[in-house]
Image (cartoon, rainbow, N blue to C red; front, top):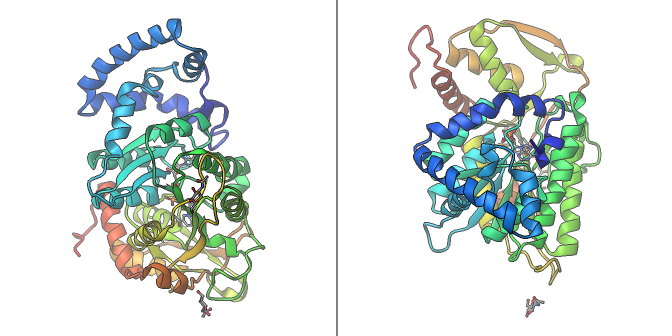
Length: 440
Ligand SMILES: NC(=O)c1ccc[n+]([C@@H]2O[C@H](COP(=O)([O-])OP(=O)(O)OC[C@H]3O[C@@H](n4cnc5c(N)ncnc54)[C@H](O)[C@@H]3O)[C@@H](O)[C@H]2O)c1
Ligand SMILES: *[C@@H]1O[C@H](CO)[C@@H](O)[C@H](O)[C@H]1NC(C)=O
Ligand SMILES: *[C@@H]1O[C@H](CO)[C@@H](O)[C@H](O)[C@H]1NC(C)=O
């Protein structure tokens, strides 16, 4: 079997290979179970026939295509007729002034919610995700099924795959890109630094290259992070504050992304908006984040680690509920101006923006635990320890007045209300009965 682009560059090196080999059959099985499986079966045979024809008769570029993508049943669908149909259908507009959006990281936490919100209001949406196993990929698959039910197709691929991106842009004239694919997590950067460079720097550049070459050029909205404020002590954090003291490699790659965005805006006229998210949480969230792993451990009676900074001060976070983040993403999409370039050349100054998207209300982590205890009806076993020096900052607090004035960003869900919704989802998704019945 010829290796694909992804094989040589897994998003989480050292983990990616295992994931691909162990879950390959799972992926194929997934397709057999889908309602379109009869169609898939039929089209597979049509495609196999077509591919043989292509190998023997078609141009060198056809051969190049074969080398990369002919190795498995799943890969046969890459670039095939059914694959194109699914993408075109997914990109279809249901309102006249709608956007046609490519969402990267669509099977991720934020990507899923943003894709659903866009689809719901009638925009065309196509997702892309490499389904890496940084955290349980079955959760990503469940989000994918949710998206499929709402008519959003998620292309399985890596944002470092320039051939794939070019193919997508030649198939669909995307008006906007919401770029959320990234290697997230602060602590994991010490374990696997290469994955951050791969997705957050190399992947970002590959994506910008594809956007710059596309005709028309899309406007881009992408996720930076509050972590760019790093060791900055001035609070609340405003967009104009210094961001040159990152405390983790994750933060450094997001900061690098903001600088790379400046370059692509400056040279090629790409309209780019960077969003600095502040600790996003909610249903379908990320298992590697504290609120999620605390919930899991509290329910299992497993002790949780609570970190204490200097002088016994607990870290605090400006926790932001997912629906508020989604509103911020849509607000920035709707106020994004068009890119000015075409055919890889700039024609006039393009828009370049950065916004904080937070909740403006930092909450100490022990308070988060209290709220979870209340909804889970279990006392947490707390293991209080000194905060390790692994990249976490002690405090975050967003100044959101810029986003408020530009597109009326106004977060409305406080931590208690948001965690109630998260816990409700968690108990249902993991089918966990509580001692007494959970009610609203
Ligand atoms: N959740 C937060 O609290 C938070 C805070 C600040 C910034 N962010 C940023 O927001 C974005 C979305 O975060 P999330 O919480 O939804 O994370 P997530 O990990 O759930 O979603 C990211 C998705 O991107 C995919 N992906 C990663 N590398 C890829 C690659 N090279 N090619 C294709 N797909 C790839 C992953 O499989 C995943 O599904 C990220 O850029 C993240 O850095 C998140
Ligand atoms: C550049 O933009 C101006 C108006 O903004 C337009 O008249 C002109 O045709 C554009 N040039 C190119 C090469 O696209
Ligand atoms: C918040 O940011 C705005 C600019 O968007 C700035 O004018 C204001 O002074 C900041 N407020 C605080 C409290 O830092």
